[in-house]
Length: 308
Image 1 (cartoon, helix red, strand yellow):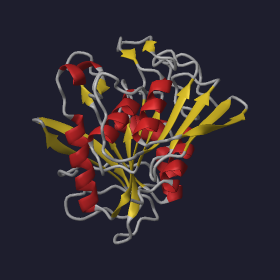
Image 2 (cartoon, rainbow, N blue to C red):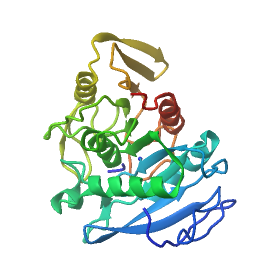
Image 3 (cartoon, rainbow, N blue to C red):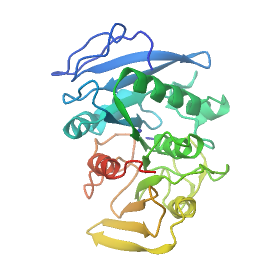
């Protein structure tokens, strides 16, 4: 299934991005820094993207990008055009790697009821992400009211869990082609801005819920259940407004608490691929061209800082 600190690190780069170690001082603007942190006896790896506009001392938004199963932080970052999109908006990005199964080698997140080795081994991904965000905030100038999580598939599921389990850390989440964990309660004690993007033709994590194709064999909650959960948490008492633009249907909840926007983007031509992203061979079909999920999510984030 396809699915968004700091120990001494090696640095990877892609031209024109510069490379350097993070050990001595914060990296210059325009760098990609890779590193590792110990958590639960495991070495957990990550990448930090620093836009060219970054200025130490000037707080910038931070986006945590969470790959899907069979992916990695680097794959998620590159395949979905995160670096140029973040750079154009002056946003920092951090892209952690899930834990790889010892047999399959597939990296996954423990989102509660999915997925694979990370769930079976009770990997504490919530604690890892919390530590990662704290370390990034210490090393860089991060606006604490503009910290966000975006993810694909299992990474989307992880973003839902972070919103539930880390109250006060994130201002908004954008799960793409994922499902909530309906086997555990979600009581974050505060509203959460939520943008849900999901294709009606998704066979891996079905829009209507149920067991999809692929290796996870999880009985997923439906998209409607996800929307209803966040409407309830955010006290959205009004009817939803609906707009349609070709294959894209947008549904915005009304009457919600401050910092509690709930938006659903449904794609009639969407499958399990990242809308507007790279075509991954092992996922059936081509990505929807009705929406650039990366740009849409980042713009939603910028429009929804925490204000209360």
